[in-house]
Length: 539
Image (tube, rainbow, N blue to C red):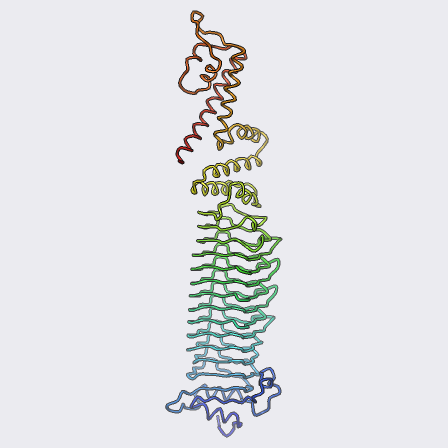
């Protein structure tokens, strides 16, 4: 490029480049210097894109002892800044500049790139490698930001960036690799889909106070995202549209504290098959209008929904199906509106509260070691009976086992008795009849001392009957003494003898009564013995 063809402003930039000095073309008036007002800027602030390309491509040698760089502020760049496949060895730092056309950096090898508080009709950096930081802080990019396949060895800073591409991808960053932190905070906004599927981030991913807007679609797609440290979508984070973190891996914490997600009638937060090495916080003011799903997720620490508000009345509001977690804190600010699916989850400690239980639950296959608080069996049975699938044996057995492990054997038996009673409701009339008899007599074997009451009643009945109608003596030559009480007790006892049963023999209907007492005594006696054995073994 001939230096004689340069404008005065371009000549200043050309001469400043070898030493890396800043060329500031701004007026000093903040209102006028806003890149959105670039149409009002004069010719003295125009810089041709081809001049920038020439400098970045090595048209001017660096001055010895200095670091050459393109440092420009307050300029309007017109023409195509096309550095596709270029190898750029010097930094590019533009501040408060406006571009007429979207810069193209695809598959370029760049030094650090700073485009701060700039206005761009798009930025194409697909496959670009940046050896240093990619700094876009405060810029307005209204035609889509393409970073798919890009590699940034330093920080990717998009703090305060405004992205607008309502009919497409606001940020296309599939398979992006960043070796340090990614900042999408401090007023970061996106109209259109933000895409990070398959991205790998070596530090933290920060969406604190970000606002994503893509109603009816995906606000954030980050399936298979791999973040080495923490992910923060909190501090006022909002999303209209689905947030997808399916299959993502987070090496630290995942925080949605105070976030507001809205995708009514659809999925608001999809964290299926998520893996988190520490805790997950959807708490302290977290609001989701739409389904929240952690199906198949693995959380090494705590999954907290403390003081959250979940609303999806026509479907599943919260899915923890097949979740594996050390602890789940399920104490929302109010009862969850919609189904809570805990089926086949494996949780070491489940913390909940009766006053915030969802009206509809799915509990079949749920495994837990401890419940906090354990509550009484009566209260916990109210929890089990909210299951939308009706009777299933496993939830009762799991709850009974938990009570027994806590030494609350009576509560465990109460749960198993309730299981038998609820099962009876699903059976035919014959089995129901038998069940009512079992329940009334011995409480399905879980109320063994009820059998003792029946034994006493049976003893009293036999004593009265045989006092009124004394049985005949078997050997007429003997004159044994008859005692109706001991005779009935001798019939009841399944083993041993009191010397009465072998001496007397009732006839007719009284023989049937005696046989009934023998059979009933055997069944009731064994039930009492089993109950006593269980109590003694527990003690």
